[in-house]
Length: 480
Image 1 (cartoon, one colour):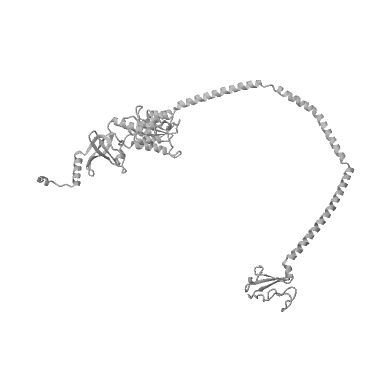
Image 2 (cartoon, helix red, strand yellow; image 1 turned 180 degrees about the horizontal axis):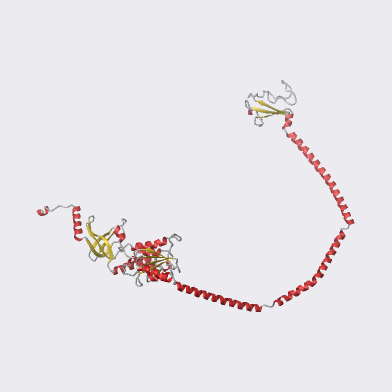
C-alpha cells in the first residue's frame, strides 16, 4: 500500500515541470563562461543557426549559436578547437537536456589560436592560394595607389610621408577597421571595391593596393587571418602588397598577397622608386648612351676614311671610258656617210622599178583584170537571181495549192465561231451562236437557229453520174 505522504504530492504536467526546471537553471546560473573542446560541428544549419557540443574528459554540454550572433563572430567555431565561450545556460524541453546559448566565442589561449592558424594555412595552401606561380609583378611606377587601412592611425601618415619623400603619387584611401568583429569583412570588401572600379571612371582605378596595419598581438591581427580576407587578396586582379604588423608578425594575407612588406613604411618603399635616384640613373644612362653614340660615330668615321683610301682615283676610273668615247666619236662621221650611201643605193634600186612606162603597163593589166572580174560577176549575179526567182515562183504555187482559199474558190465556205475559231462539226454549233462565214469573195455574219438536219438516208450522190431521184449537181454545204 502506497505511502499517504506520496499521495498528497503536487501533480505536475511534463510542460510545467520542464518550465520550472528551466527557470531554476536560468536563475541559478544565468551567464556563464565555459571552457571546452568543440565536437560535432558540421557548419551552419539551413536556418543559419549553429549547433554543436562542448566536451572535456568526462562531460558534454550542448551549445547553440543563433544566426545573428554567428555572423558577428570574429573567430568561427571549428571541429576540435578548444575555446572559451560566454553565454546563457538554459534547457531544451524537447529533448530533456540542458544547453548553453553562446554569445561570445574565443580560442582558449595562444596555443589554440596557433593551432587554428596552422590548420587554416594548410587548408588554403592546399587550394593553391599561396602558389608563387599566381603572384603578379608590381608595377614600376603606378599612377594611383590604393591604401586599405584605418584613416586615423599612424600607418596612413607613415605611408603618405614615405611616398612624398620618394616619389609623390596619387593615393586613394579606403577607410576600414583593422581590428574587431567587422574588420575582416570591411578589408575584404575594400579589396573587391578597388578591383570593381572601371578603368576610366570618375574615380581612378589604382595600379597597386597596399593593405596596411600597425603591430599588435595575435588576437589584434586575427582579422587578417580570416578566410574572407585571404581569398579576397588571392582573387585581386590588381597587384597587392601586404603590410600588416611588424617584421616578426606573420598573417595569412602575407602568403596570399603578391608581395609582403615587413612594415607599412617598407610597403611604400616597394611601391615607388626614389625620384632623385631615378633621375640620377636616367642622367647616367643618358650620358652613357651619348658616349656610346660618340664612340660609334668615331669608329664609323675611321672605317670610312680607310675605305676611301682603298678606292682608286677618279681619273684612273674614267681614263678607259674616256678613250672609248673619243674612239667612237672619231668613227661616227665615217659610219654616218657609209650608212647614208647604203640607203641611197637602196632608194635608187626601188626608184628604178617605178618608171612611168612600167607603171603604165601594170595599170593596163590591172584594168583588164578588173573588166574580166566585172563581167564574170554580172553573169554570176544574173544566174543567181534567176534561180532565186524560180524558187520563189515554185514556193508561191505550192502555197496557193495548200491554201484554203483555193477550196473557197471552188464554192465551199469556212465557218468560224464568234471568237474566230473554225468549226469542224455541226455538234459544236449551239442555238443563237454567232457565226462568221467566209466565202471566196468575202465574209458574212450569221446566227444559228439551233436546228440540225441529219443526212437523208440513202447512198450519197457519186461524182461520176446521177444516182437518180434527185436534182443533179453539187449538194448544199449546210444540208438545207
